[in-house]
Length: 110
Image (cartoon, rainbow, N blue to C red; front, side, top):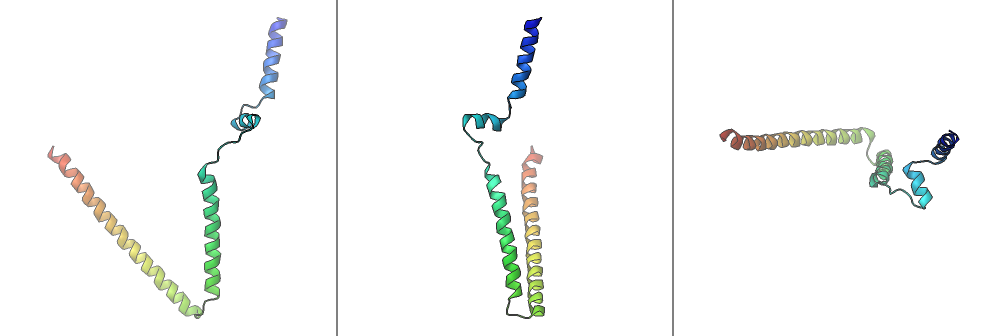
């Protein structure tokens, strides 16, 4: 019975004193976990987007045009971009429908 208590006590001490996590094991071996590329890319993209936003705002603030003219230009460019995107979406829908129809035709003949 004393041997059983000794084994239980030893197991508890080993299990509580040793961290089984991957980070702890690699740390004990003197290694570190490989970083995922997404851990580097996403923060860089966020910083880049913030810089672009600040640059665009500064460009608008110091633009040589009057505010009303600049707002009209921006409004027209946004409308043009929206129109082009709608046209692009419609074209993609037509192409995908034709591909779907051409894929269905051999299946219906069989």
